Length: 94
Ligand SMILES: [Zn+2]
Ligand SMILES: [Zn+2]
Image 1 (spheres, rainbow, N blue to C red):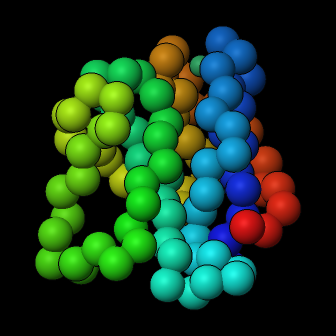
Image 2 (image 1 turned 60 degrees about the horizontal axis):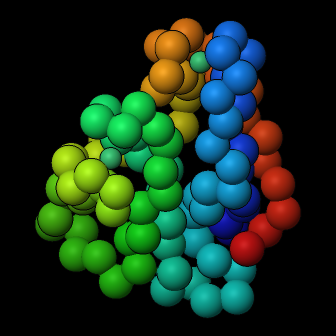
C-alpha cells in the first residue's frame, strides 16, 4: 500500500512533503517512488504508473536531469546538507 511520506532533515530543516511511496490503495496500477535529484538537491516523487520495468532511467520534471531512486534504508541522506539524519514520517494512505 502507498503512503504519503514526509522526509525531514534534523540537521538543516529541509523537508520533502507528501511524497507518494508505493502502490495506490484505490488504483493498484498507480505506483510512485521517491528519488533524489542531484541538480535540484531535492527529493521528488517519480510516477511509475505504467512504466516499463526495463526502463530504469527517470528524469526530474523540474530540471530534466537523471533521478536516483531512494531505496528503503535505515537512514536517508539529506539532499541539501548531506547529513544522514533524515526523519521519515509515514502519513495517510493515498
Ligand atoms: Zn539537511
Ligand atoms: Zn531536478
